[in-house]
Image (cartoon, rainbow, N blue to C red; front, side, top):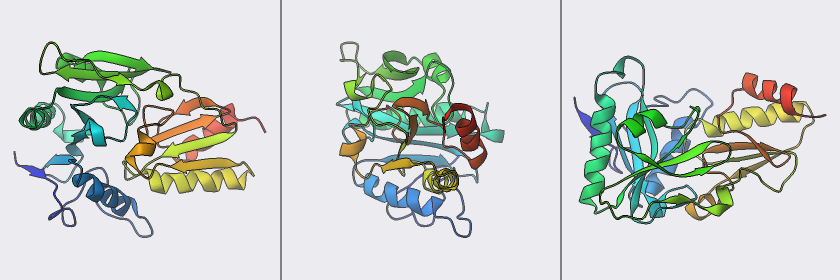
Length: 253
């Protein structure tokens, strides 16, 4: 099985797995690749199986990660996805081993990944990582878990920053925080904004444009977090249908 590493020299020609081809009128692929180009300069590593599918792992040194973590010296997994026909063939183990080897070569303390006690969309499967020896380093509301594995027994465990621990924000109404770390966010943010506008609902949209903003976010998952009246609603990148259901179930007019 051939593994391809995305670099500045091949990023224009290689697909990025979870958004393989750009559809007319969309910029999903472009937004993610633009984000990646800047992160490659900061140590981002994106490795994928040489297939046309969602089979990849993406990781970056904690100091440059877009998460509110205290994890100096660790490597942070941004996204890890093996889907469809490629499941159950040992590919997850192969890609994780790539991350472990790269992290050790760089002299990292260990590896960190965000998951949840109860399985959530767009988050890594905590059960898999726990099976591979990862432990819970810290938690945040509602049920986020920061998992880690250290390469030395006496390493200090990473943690979630206090700003992201309680899952609440001070702003009232609908508030969406997001970044281009996922190729789908830009498209679906605009879709839910149109829905909110059609219902004459005000929605405040905050886009993280640099790591400093993301590292001081009010929620551990900076790719996408929706709040209503200060309370966390979801980290799922919502389709129009799912957003409408949330409005019908949760929002007071």
